[in-house]
Image 1 (cartoon, one colour):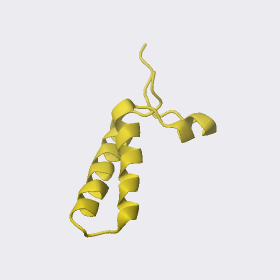
Image 2 (image 1 turned 180 degrees about the vertical axis):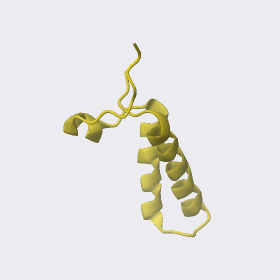
Image 3 (image 1 turned 135 degrees about the vertical axis):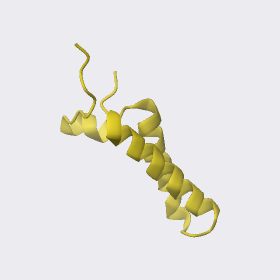
Image 4 (image 1 turned 45 degrees about the horizontal axis):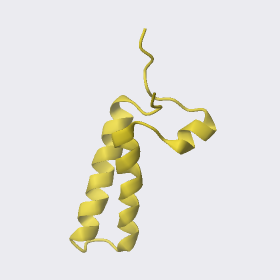
Length: 62
């Protein structure tokens, strides 16, 4: 079960893709490859930092 949900997940995917595209187009430097991190955490709905901090933005199913 993931700890990333809803708007948080969508924003992570969008920001990750935007950073990767900007890097490929040469608009930003190699640091833009960091976009892989939010992209993967959004896709898999799990954020290791959230787990360490005890944060959960995923709504619980009842």
